[in-house]
Figure (cartoon, rainbow, N blue to C red):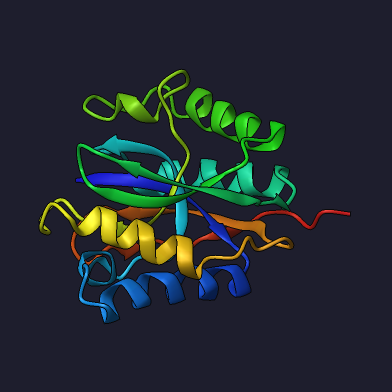
Length: 182
C-alpha cells in the first residue's frame, strides 16, 4: 500500500481550488482529478507499506506542534511528463520546516520510488488537473483555463494535515488540525 501525507487548506480555499478543477472538467478538458475524489492539497511525502496507526500517531503530534500558516498560491505550473497542471505555493519558511520535520520523523519509512518528494527534489504543488491519460493538448487547454479563471486567494491558510491511502478513489485517513496561529 502507498500512503501520502497531505497538507490541506482552509475550507474557502479548498472550494475555490475545486471550482477550478470542476471548470476544467465542465469544459471537457479533463475529469481525472475529480475521479480521484481528493481534497485540494500539497503532498509532503509518499511512503510504501507503513504501519499506518504508528505513523498517524506521529503525524498527530507534528500537527499539534505546528501552527496554521499562510498559503499563498501565487503561480501556475505544469509537469510536462505527467501533464499535471497545478497551483504553486510561495515556499515559505514554515512550509520548508514542516517538510523537513516530516521527512526526519518518518525517515524509517520506505519512500523508494517517491524520492522526488524529498528535500532538494520536491516541487510543492496543488494539482487542479491530472492529465496523463488525456489528449496531449489538455495541459495547454487547462493552463489557459486556469490563467483566465484564477485569482490569487490572499487569505488562504494551511489548516490540516493527514494521511491518505493512494488508491482510486483516494481514502482519506482522519486529518489532524494544525494548532491555531496567534
